[in-house]
Length: 331
Image (cartoon, rainbow, N blue to C red; front, side, top):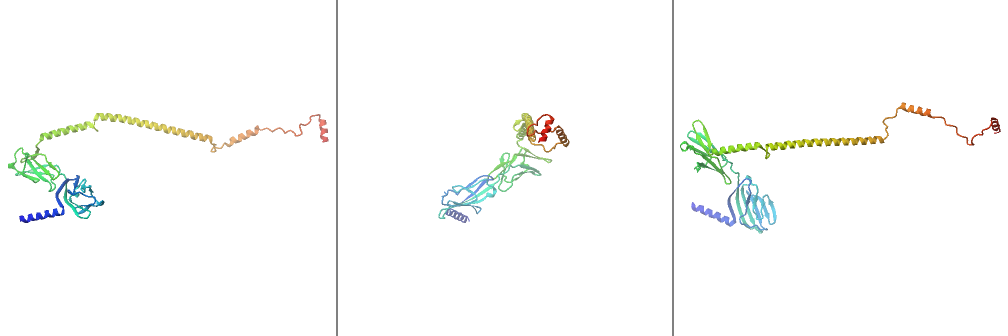
């Protein structure tokens, strides 16, 4: 049996070295991280052909200086670059380099495992008839490893559930659990399980520290009440009051300026209309008929007959009446 296993391993090693293929273990990365997968020590030449596949689907292809497919970023040396990786990027990545004649130069296969960081756990206590049950929360999949601590010493337990019998539980004993995966590790606060026939309480081992934290948080809340936008409350009120006063004053001045401007504009428009009206004859209001008749009568009365025009032969001779008669008869 052992000889068969040895022969199989030797055959696989010979096959890998003969084909230039190297299979590495899984590369564990956290969600949102950066991953660089290289083709080992191979040097990519300009006339080489480079292929990258993810779960047997081609994601990059370069032939010589021409890039045929570029779904993922690749460096000049042929390394594959993954930014802000998510869980869907997990899987098998395979890189192959050929020379200009199509001969295989290097081939590599690597597994990528993208994991979520573990959350902070808590220890839940349940009193039972023959002891106490402790449960470590935040265990959501099989990739999380659980370990227990009792009084600062590692306990022989690797499951999320721990049962402690009454004979092993002493007054003052404290317990804590730690959860971890390949990329993160977090521990819960210590608890002191105290069980009786009537009630159950779990007290925190560092009660003094918790009280200090509560008092500190209370002081911080009081400070938050005294401060507003990083300034003391009374100073902020003064600034807001003065600023409000100047804002109201500015608005009043702006309203006055606008009203004066409108008044001056309206006055200038009225003056312009008045000038145009005075220059144009008014046909809209005809003169009164009675006034026209009175005016015509006055003009007719004031007219007098004109004196007769002088004769063209000159003025008549002035003499005795008889001579005038004789002269007329002669004519």
